[in-house]
Length: 122
Image (cartoon, rainbow, N blue to C red; front, side, top):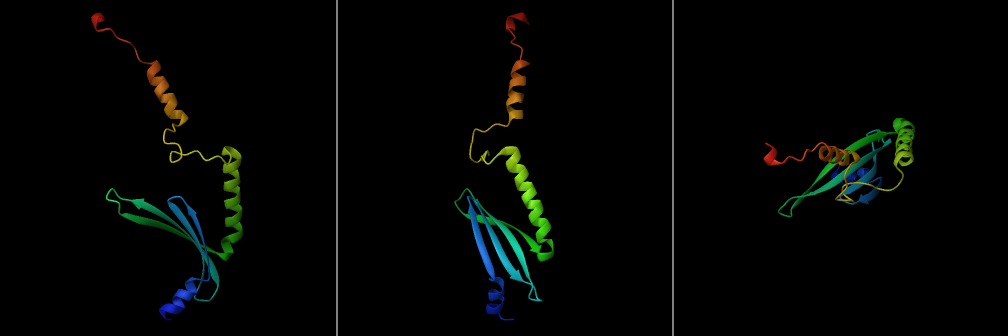
């Protein structure tokens, strides 16, 4: 198979989702038997102190026999998240001063257990 044929085989169908520093690629590809499967690639950009950057990529392969269960589980997991936490995005990236409730309790409990000591009493 020539490089051109291989490239054409790779480009059966593609969609791209850009999400901040992450980009998701949904690519339909063909097996040697000419059946189709899906690859989902997450590409995340990392910038170095000198301004240069690199990408880290993670890829999963999904085959037709797993589509129905995968879709059900993805829907169940995303529905659970939205039902439990709503659609509002809360993250350290979006709120730099964000503190977890457990971190706030630690500060409060540390302050409450503090004893003011006068050095003249020693």
